[in-house]
Image 1 (tube, helix red, strand yellow):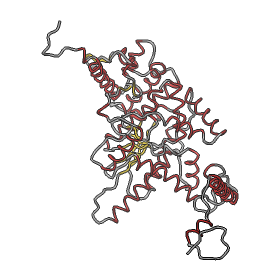
Image 2 (cartoon, helix red, strand yellow):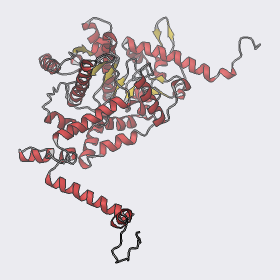
Image 3 (tube, helix red, strand yellow):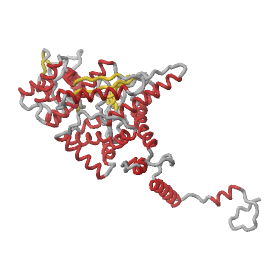
Image 4 (spheres, one colour):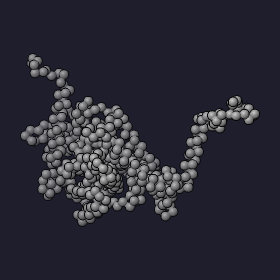
Length: 480
């Protein structure tokens, strides 16, 4: 029988539990701190040795590049090897897609491709997910789940930019090669000019678009209007070709710039709508799977995997957008985590009800929608009043931010009504101040924007009726 005495020197039998208790003293806060210090010291030793922190086998990207005379120091390049870095970056993309139900097996996804780094990585990762789904489909016996389709779209802005036709044609041919070199399934490549948002002949549409752009005097207003036209062009391509989702390559760095731009322009109310993973305010929902990936990681991946990029419209922004871009770049040089900090801070804003996929019969989509609804404490769409949007930039508006509605008499638009229904940023930076110029500006708008303004008018009237419904007399009541 064991005496269980710690001072006994007789050598009597002691059970294993007492031995373990003596050999393994209870963990205290001091012990936990010392363990953390040991782990930190081991991680530092791995960094000093140039060994990957994840696999503990391969050399880091920075160490391997230093041996070859290259420079990939700093950030994840100094912590991970090439394989682990790529796996980590693709994991962010895949997690964003699956956690937010961005793509279902029955979807047909349109990837917006500008030729730059972000859109190139978005295309590559989407292609890899499609290839894996195709392999699973071929290996399955019942083949119950189809493989989602992928298309690629490039918006030709030759009509409103200074690029020559020869340079643009060469760039488009290089993009076609990039898309065609991807392994099957085959992806259709769409090249659509910006003026296609008008249902007119090519020459007339180009003239009308240039005339509309020239009526905007503010440089920042022109850039914002052109960005909205790009989205309208993508929506047009998706609707005409049967796509169900539009995938953008918007990364952490771009979102950080947009957060400050929207704040300066007075678009704080609508900011939360623009920076979420999903934006279903459009007829074809828009998804941002690279939201958690900074630009320097995407550049590193393109360099490691030799992903070819094509710079087409690489002109710098002017006005507010250019100043904010330079400012954020300077902040990032001082502290590499500034862009992520800006995005995470803005990400605490409560999303709108359209910042999730519409619920359908897809079980995974319903589960992801309920998960995000619980995470952000979102109300269901039926419990919220219908949203109003700016007819120029499609930003959500507060119901109290406009008091007058847009009147349509015999197909003609009241310019004062549209001006009152726009957000403050568009009123100040896009719309002309002169009434005659404003009327001319509205007459040049694409049909899709005019029809949206008409929908906003009917929505405003319905919201007004809901607000005063308690004060109205019913049909069976007597009133003066």
